[in-house]
Length: 455
Image (cartoon, rainbow, N blue to C red):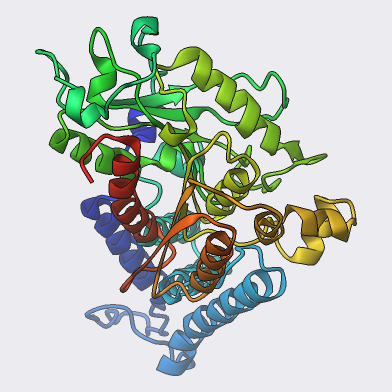
């Protein structure tokens, strides 16, 4: 089972296989040959035919019209579902890209063709039709996932934790004192240091908050894996919704690459769960929907201080997030500047919303509009004046929904006294490319801030 859940679903051969299977299934289901039925006089041989022949009342139009109508009806149903879910209910929180809409419409169209084949057909055609429905849906899911490039394995797509729990290094109290010089100047990697870091899930007790979070994922750089590791900086990160902590593969790849260039030095990365489930969004506040704020700023912080070899000062702590997690990171940095000295907001939302603002006020804030307004990052930023807090904001030119929000958040942060950096990537959308771009632009600045590389 673990091998199946760890299957790389981004690999092209697998996707091409499902694409081919879907095309073949559509071809089979669309062609319904009609048996020859002709009256043959007794004593004469039946006429030989090269294949299925249409009855006298079965014109080509009558043969091809039903599957064509099924395909069109399915496509229209897909369009209607998109209009309701995307435009009316705003389930996804942002407009879907064109290729995602195409996958949805194609899936509905193909499934409708399969359902049509359940009517007045042989038993084996019914079996093929049922199996084809699963193939069509899997093909569409794999296609959409490949477009977004956030879930590398079947387990991560299904939200099933398949990683082995990470064994934490022993605490090194001797090295926990305040550093007198940046690590990039004083660190000498010992012999036998691993070439790459290690990553895996860790359990964080929700002692204070009681929030039912999924396991966090921790990245330990090579310098953290030696016998006497130095205290290192840490980044607390959150992904988007739907999503989870195991989607941190872009960050791990970037950190490993940067550690290789900096003698094994890199910050620890703790990717935590601010959702509880891919299918819910309690937003990053304490509410009857979940005490997310207390979980991250108390339970997670206590876990770090108790179990990890990290530098104690706020200059060595950063909070980061993508999309929904970006708004959370901005909110936490604005509320708790004594904890986090740096912020990386990757294509983040500008408001703590779950669906529409009206729905959020009703479900999360129990109808209290003033409470919602008080939790908006813009409100928090305007009420404070910050010193020595670096804030990095990134988004893409193809992200027409969140790029303006990121720009507005960056302007609010700058007006509140934060040292801000704003990066906009050409041809970058709101997918895995946005995460990778944000890390590409933000991590070098954080390395300098943390004293892991020269400025």
